[in-house]
Length: 124
Image (cartoon, rainbow, N blue to C red; front, top):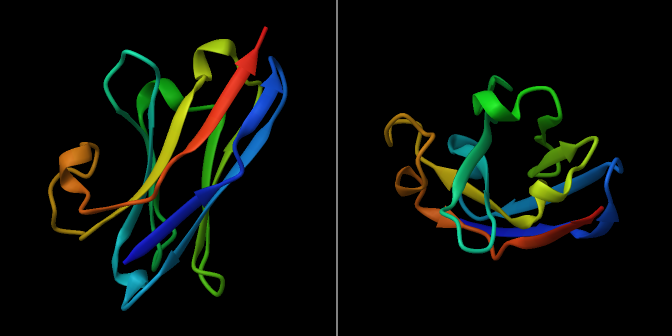
């Protein structure tokens, strides 16, 4: 499975941004897709995940409300919409893919495939 994330950029506080992750390879729709982020000097943290087949979504508690994950199955693309951006949202955002039985799917170690990351910088 190959993943390519894009859509990051430099935005102002209060703006919205939609990140995209294009997946390719065999049986990509069998995987659970997740978004993580890593701010400078901090550990990588889970944001949200989605299942291709059911569209079921799950968010880290602190991410609920401003983050929305969505999947476009025909395009093999997963999106992360971020609204009301804050400077503390500044991070590299990564998409990842995991087998559904990999664990609780909120930990980076549960994901075997990673995209290259896309930088989001929010200025105040």
